[in-house]
Amino acid sequence: MRIGFIGPGIMGKPMAKNLLRAGCEAIRGGLAGSTVMNAKAPMMMDQDFRPGFRIDLHIKDPGNVVDAARTVDAPIPLTQTVLEMMKAPHHDGAGAGACDHSALLKYYQKLTGKVLHH
Image (cartoon, rainbow, N blue to C red):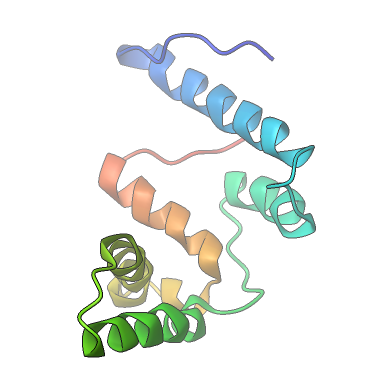
């Protein structure tokens, strides 16, 4: 797979898809690869967000971390950001909270106004 410059216009979307596919392929064989990623990456590209573990339930864990950090005045800006990203599909009103963490793709699609497909 070749990855080129993600430029403006009609070439940007196909190149972004190639970049996503290449990223998944690169991760797949390494320590960051997982069975979950192998199953979810193609599903996300097909806009299939059937839940494994609903994001509404997943929000609880980083929420507990943020609450605990607040009690000891520990700064955790990245965890707070991830929590806010996870809450976005929950508050979207389109039922994304019943999807699993792959619904975060919907967060990025809403930000960019672009929808990724195979």
